[in-house]
Length: 165
Picture 1 (spheres, helix red, strand yellow):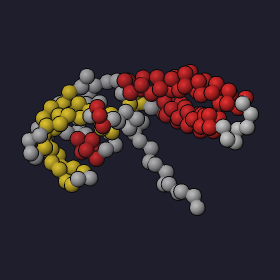
Picture 2 (cartoon, one colour; picture 1 turned 90 degrees about the horizontal axis):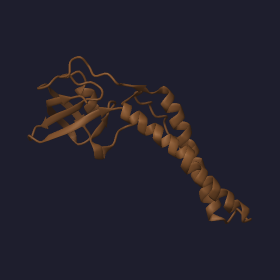
Picture 3 (cartoon, helix red, strand yellow; picture 1 turned 60 degrees about the vertical axis):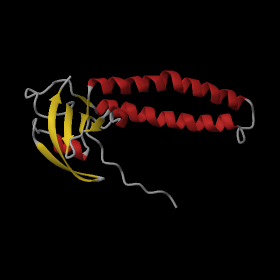
Picture 4 (cartoon, one colour; picture 1 turned 120 degrees about the vertical axis):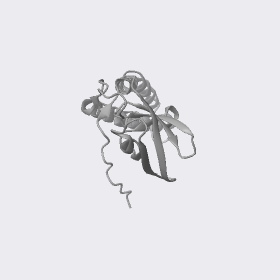
């Protein structure tokens, strides 16, 4: 019995310049450095003879498949991305690329940056433009109050500040 997975809905095609450059660097690293290195290891392991019990060969082939899958994805994705370079005329309104400072009901303040789905990183406070919180923030102004259904429940926030870099 196979594992059936529903196809993922494609994320928004928007990306910041920094995010685009990071994806290009990853593609370059995989194609020019990592793949040739793994290919050499697999070739050396294949030259040793019996491949059925050769861990270097088996693991190397799996690594090559993962690298090739990621390279195909990155090439295709980079072609379809739209780099957002311009800042909006109204710099007090929330749009793609904005750093948004929010205050919750308890007075705690948090800051998020709205970025493309290829750039999200919880450790750097980046959230996807497709996330429920980001969708609720879009086109809102400073001092607007928003209500968002999050996994931990419904929360209200006030927009304290909006900045673009």
